[in-house]
Length: 105
Image (tube, rainbow, N blue to C red):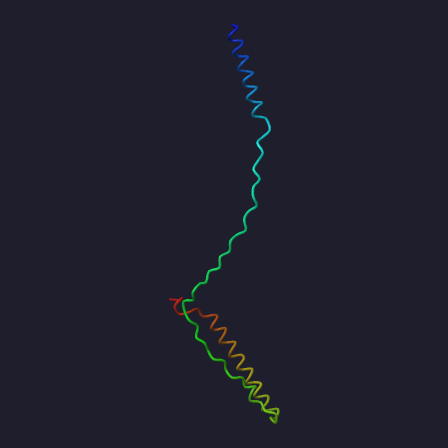
């Protein structure tokens, strides 16, 4: 082994140790990440493809009750009022259940 080999090996070993030591040092301080932004909510108005037929409200039979009516007439008026209310509910259910004619085609 020559003297040049000795110093070359010694230099490579020292250079390797120095490179290893420099890599094993303190890591760079990490970046502090900003908190996530709040989501943006966009509300869009969607046009309705069909127009719903407006049905006039049926007159309430209870307005026909008078002060001097007997119990049987009042019972008939109450039953009629109930039937009108049930009919309104059925019309609303049918309108909500059935899609618009343009949409279904």
